[in-house]
Structures are given as structure tokens and as C-alpha cells.
Length: 180
Image 1 (cartoon, one colour):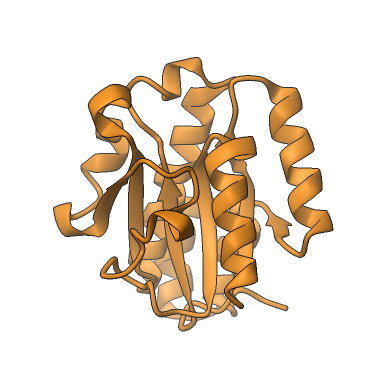
Image 2: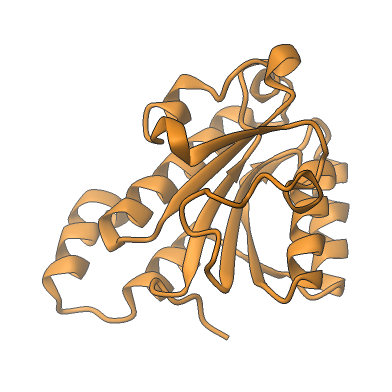
């Protein structure tokens, strides 16, 4: 199944000030999530963010926060966005497909992804835009999610599936800004 721009939303999970420095290759995770947000905005895909216990872990990192409207971000204390009940009211919450980026892969991303699948959503986790403190935890989480019905993709897979075809003004615009 392909990721459809008309049916999907991008959910950025817990890329927060005190979390990102602890991630293995955190700077790359943030850069790739930022890139995905840019592509999503160009193609008209809603973008939402969540922050785990912001009193302790701080707000979303500025590179991400500056791209999201204040009403597009929800705070939570439960690891799963679904269990926290924080998705209602966020942009794209009603859509059938969720594309996930963020941290930590083996905790909040995994629990959110598995519960979204249980809720009947089609879930895609962007392997090059998720991270954990330890690479092994990230890798095992990706393996487990795949085993449980979550599709594991890359940021370029997402972008090209959202676009669907070349030769359009939108493709040229996205290609010029993001794909070169």
C-alpha cells in the first residue's frame, strides 16, 4: 500500500530539548524530521507534534517547533499518543494513514504506532527520522513494529509516494527544494 497525501498526516513525536542530545545521531533525526515537515507542508499533508512531559524534557527543539503552529502540538505523559488521548483536535487526526517520525523509537514511537494500528490506522514509521538513545533499541523497535503490521519506510519513500508523479509543477517545486 502506498502513502497517499490526501489520506495521511505526519506526526512528529517527542523531539524535545532534553531528549534530542541523548539520541544516537540525534542531529540527523531532527534534520530528517524537519525535511519531512517541509515536504508535507509543500504537498498539503497536515503535520502534528507531541511532547512527552514537557515540564521535564522541555519543549520541542526549536528547529521543529518553529515549523508547527502552537495548536498543532499536544503535551502528554503517557508514552503512547493514543493512550494519552492527545491526538484528537490535532491537524490530520481523522486521517486513515499516519507517518511517524521522532523519539524514542522503542518507547513512544513504538507504543503510538502499535496502538494506531490497533485503532485501524495504516502506520508508516520513517526509519531515517526516528531515534533512540541506543541504536540497538531503535533497530529492535523497527523490527518489532514491522512484525506487528507497521510499514517501515524512508523519508524519500514518503516524499515520492506523497507526490505520486513527476512532471507536475508540485514535483518540480519539491524536487528543486528538497530532493536535490
